[in-house]
Amino acid sequence: MPSAASRRSMRSSWGCIRASRTRCGRTRSMCGNMGRCERAWQGAVGWGALLLTLGWLGWGVGVSLGQEAGRGFPLRLLFPFPRSVLEVSRFELIAVHQTQGRNSSPRLLVDGRPHPWEPYRAPVLVARLHLSPGKHRLEIGSQRVEVFVKGEKGPPPPQDWPLLRSHPSSEEGIGDCRLCHEVEEREGLKAILAVRTPGACEGCHSEEEFAAAHSHPKAPLAPCQICHTLHGSSQKGLLKKPARELCLPCHD
Image (cartoon, rainbow, N blue to C red):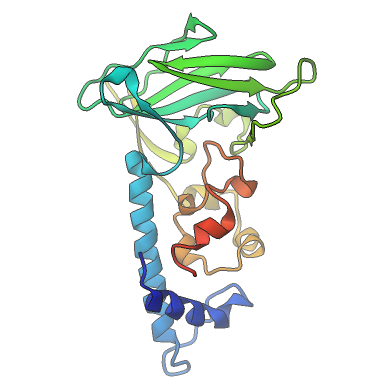
């Protein structure tokens, strides 16, 4: 984590560019603060890369479901979250199952009935679901998850369950991980690799949109998944946490 002195340097360095939301572009001879700006940017980018790495290892977005069947294999659910409300009836259940060398998948039951997994390589688990409005029970191995699907007809959702949103996608893009990830086909199985950010995001979100939404230099935030998640969030703007909590690692 950046030191207190580094955070103070970052705040003072970015103060001159916060109004325009773009890098000022001055040379060191024109502005003695420019060198400090560059160092702050480099430090922030390095910190962001560390956060990204931790997220890829399963320490970031998602809900831990404990140890599957008592075997000591952590199971992390990326979508949907337990006790959440969904606005869509068709979606993909996405989880990460650290199998420690085994390529077996835990059993999936939807309302008590067996449901197949899609052909993805471990540790990724994906299942395509189509649920009717109302409450449903999902069982992944020994772990049980309840979700509620909203509908025009049917009972209202539980009041204390948050609404879970995911990134909108065109109909052609549903189920296509390649929109955001590098994907390889190996022996009939899809292997999900690194997230293609910010390139995947910039195909739809322009520089003008970024400037309107962020009072912050773009470079330190280039790995968009430092703050955002596409798989699912109950926060505004698909943030991982409330905005203030996301800023605290670098800003007091």
